[in-house]
Length: 250
Image (cartoon, rainbow, N blue to C red; front, side, top):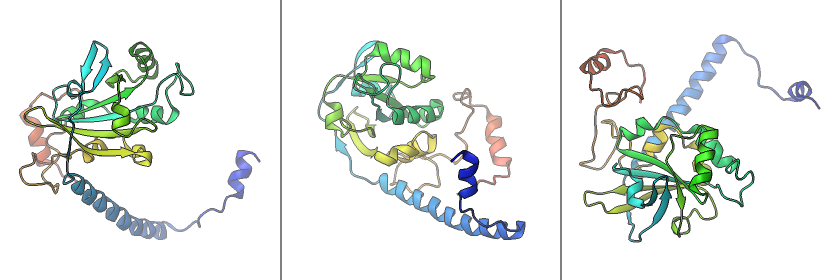
């Protein structure tokens, strides 16, 4: 059966008038808004999850040599660390990483927006730095910090047999805590700035969020910048936001 035959055999939805279509869409929109609100409630619950202290020392290989888990934060407060499968036992090696992990890497948004919220995203694999450098360049992933696992980190944090995002927080004394973990189909949603921030202990850090007392917050929208304009505190930007007719509703 060719493509046209498959399409012809489909049991398609009814075709309706513009008025009926608008009515159906409005009813679906109500359900989507409910889903958005539930997503916000779930993110708020994550910010109240207990933390697990990381007592063990871990060593990774980076482009400049050996680094610690603390080094992976790159000076920021939060770290989202994804274990991607790229090693000799993965199909496609050394030209390719795991197909699913590669789809995820293709979805990663511009990291400057995460950095603006004091959050670092990094990848870790068993592949050598030499192979990783070639892979990143060819696949267009050169902006993603990607480290080599050298010890039991993957086993200790539930990513030795499967992929997953571990979320960590660094406190004022450089003590590290594991705060959340996403794996399986949860990884499918990762890649956007918002979904990364929503799994961190500080969240998006915007004034509408339900966060514990004392958590950092700034006015919604005002921290947003073009990815090449962070650090440029042009006062005109705040005026633009204040005077705009904002149609985006929470």
